[in-house]
Length: 634
Image (cartoon, rainbow, N blue to C red; front, side):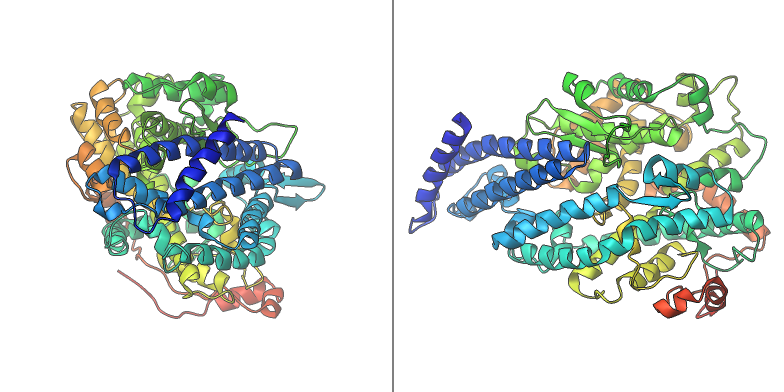
């Protein structure tokens, strides 16, 4: 009641401004308004996060409606704050922090939709799409396979070509067609909301978060820097998969069938390391079996991650974190299993939601998500509009930067997951770098093309009638992969990736996979590391932790180049540290591919057809796949 009364007073005070004939130029008055805004923002953002958490950890209609209503209440607050903020003559202010706060308050996203019925529909649509994705199941005889852990584990460990195809297609059949028309409506409503804020379309709005006029050109330049290494990796993996499955299934110069990478979206390939290992008989840096043998569980993984952060002098997790996080999948209800970190905007409540499995991959994911929590903890005393990463990619990079240190053989031995003496020779190093490349380099074209597709959907270059076809054109263009079965426009394969129906931009991950190596190199230098970059473990280095913590505290209070400069000494994104890290592997791949007579690049196929053609079956699919349009060779 006290908060509600305060809000009435706040609203009436600002409402009086709306009738004023001239804009308010008193900067002190603006600061007082911002303080009031911050108090109420914490209140409404907390209520929205709490309702969203309740829904994602217990999916049911009642929780969904509560989540939708809390989101609408938050949007109403944001919209009213936006309107009231326009009463100030911000251009006349001299305090850059004040001006930056007002600028961020005016970026209200979906709340820009003035027609309340349309905003209600958009909010409900987003909830419905997330529910379709999160409750999707694949029918397998008398079993219903859930995404995590059933489908994830089968793809990661399975090696039967047809079974993998069944899993790959089954997931897309389970969620894609249902989401297709919903997504079309979402695009229309989302574009309308963002258009009312003065942006051309949603892609224009999302790109504005990076505050860089040359952002798209900068991304393309970064991609061109790393593309040659990706082509060498792709060619090598294609040859090894051809040896494993037969050249009739993986052609020497063809795109690779998308279901063979050990991952539902072919975004990271580390699960097929056993099929592509450069040198056999070496010590394997895959500690999943050791974790299981030593009795590790989810709590041990989270404790180990926190211990790494605190060894750097960073902030430990809060009591609320340990009490309220969901770190394993509950057996008694549907949940959104996709791992995520949560800030409840009250400066003490931070949580992770994750269906943790005892694997090395999930150990790295725990560090990734805890990196988000550390960022939240470091900037918790900033005003609400500044409680975000310097840019979205920074937030994703923090935990991954630390995971680069955690994944080193040196560190894995330190925490008892490698027994005996470490093998340290050139061949062992190449094996280690290959495993890292299957995760880090393989991911880059996927992370780049995801929002290339969405930006084109939002600005109309991709129409509602060819969304799936254009998706596969981009996947073939950038990744060199094709679907294992024909696809058509009844399918909606983009929707089978969490971030599409969940309205989460993806280019942040491309940025993250570049800048995490910049952060890593800077922290290695701070820890006085000597030797190859890929061997650096800055565990227990308070100097490295201080460097990172000082950057994290800034939140988004300053443009990201200033945050970058604070940790690296440079204001630009560059792939140089990433390429330096992988340089020995790049050289080895080039030499190995040349010696094996392997060419980089791939033939172009058209793996889409009308529904009638699609129903004709795999024989026709094979024939159509053999239509060669052009050949890219070294």
